[in-house]
Length: 290
Image (cartoon, rainbow, N blue to C red):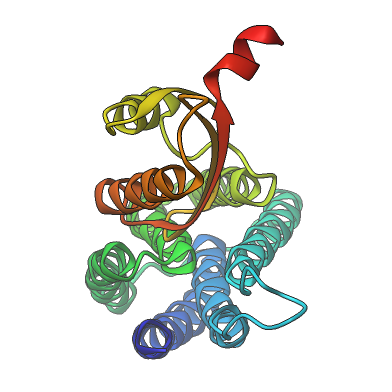
């Protein structure tokens, strides 16, 4: 619950900053007829929207285990990150449609000092938010905060490109505004891909830990002859491990149980993210005869 409260608090703080940035960019974009700034503003709007979704998703993700969900609900947080990715794809479509319209019907961009000041302020805010969110993501081992920090980081590069477009527009190169908009699409699409890649790896139970490292650790336990069928899955802060351990066929059940406890303790000590370990004890002689 402490982790949940901390993630919720961080998310709420970031939401406030993202709403502020979004309002400044969109309002200024419409005032100076800058499509790239408006697109950047909507990019920031998806940041704010993802924070709202995160507040809802996290409230479910950190509910305790129950009879129907013995492994907990933490993957809900990972599923929420897919919604963020989908929102980014939608923004890409909207920006492309706007760019096509702007090419057909060019509009004069009024790049004034005020617009440059707004962009510099929003970049400073985004840099603070990105670093703050990444730091908290590592501390709290939160998939949502990690993926959202990637999203926010892309805002900084996008905003820099908007400033470049405003500079060109100030010198009469109006097509630069459209070109920057296309660049924004590329940056947003890249962020969406990274989020989808990370989240789907968790949801389809991709390997999390190095099998060789686990094998060496398990084999170092006194009484263990060998181990195989090592499998790992889950989130960084909720890793499930199962493996088969070979012991002497004459070993007592009590000793085998003690070895299992030692293996579990060692794994959780070396890999703090492990929350569940399933160990199958097998007699070495039976394995040789198979």
